[in-house]
Length: 211
Ligand code: B16
Ligand code: MG
Image 1 (cartoon, rainbow, N blue to C red):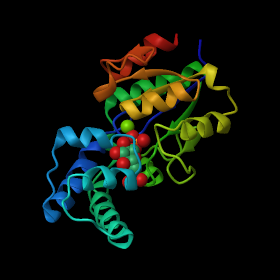
Image 2 (cartoon, helix red, strand yellow):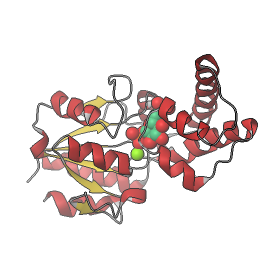
Image 3 (tube, rainbow, N blue to C red):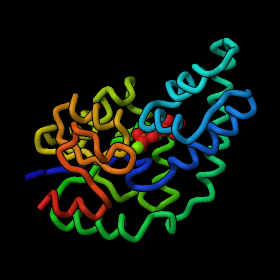
Image 4 (tube, rainbow, N blue to C red):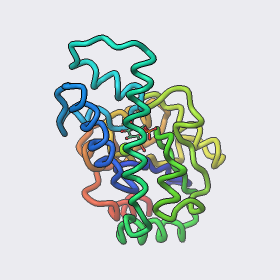
């Protein structure tokens, strides 16, 4: 049915989404901007600067581009400090076992993430040499919901979108997958997205879709 799988990273392979929240929350609190977990869901899958724009929509102050760049840097350095606490034990047994089972089927496996921190995250959790290809925020100009990162991943594993499954936890990511001509398995925050072909309660459900 499929010849390749493209995995989103944050919220799918690992839970750095909580660290994104804590780092954005610290910045928003410092600036006196209301921000909570519900609003944080709007940032899933979108780029760092677009995330900042969404947060600043609730600000009464207008900031210069230089100030915005400094805010993004401030958030990212706190986020990376939190990532530094991760280790291979932060990769769940279920995710690792499922990935290994998919590997045995011979399917190509790639990462398609908006994050520019993807190489660092993969190295923290011990997966830096695991995937056949990694497309991330460092090699794209348009973030999800644009399909560029998934198209790039498919190109890297030399497969057409029609034979690849994208696994996503963000509505922006599901939209990106469909726009690129992929079928999508949705989980977490995006689980019930009607555009997804498969709805996952847990990561290991993937094994039932690909066989
Ligand atoms: P960074 P994904 C996305 O990763 C996150 O979901 C999103 O919250 C974040 O803003 C984006 O990466 C950029 O991350 O600041 O590390 O470049 O879900 O596409 O793996
Ligand atoms: Mg995600």
